[in-house]
Image (cartoon, rainbow, N blue to C red):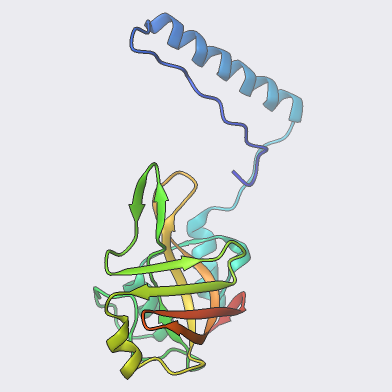
Length: 198
């Protein structure tokens, strides 16, 4: 999508459609695509996600500008920490840190897609429009606030979300620092870096 000037075309299908009409619409769209390719006179080139992913792990850094889709918490933890791979049913370790004294956090982003709400049922993690602030809200947060997150804690954040096609993905959002607990059920984090080097 980033390699082309994308314009969405849809094939219209009604309850009483006929196959000839559908095929004609498809043929017209294909003809438009061929015309555009001939006008541009060059081949489309884009970076493959798997290649970019392996490059990020090889150079040992993550950058928000790259918009890479990453694996989930378990593989990220193993690759960053150097610990043997183990399947974890979690998004955060309270007592384990990674290079630089950071915590790894892979929360679900609360969002709506096609009228359906996605995210963790126990937590609501919202990212502001500019991508610089996260608010974490949850019914279990009161007990956690009493025992746990230190003011100023820094987290390397990968967020579970939906990509442009609605498919689940994990994206690096940056390094965030805890700044406040605005009320008894939420925490706020502010972005301090668009890159993490490990």
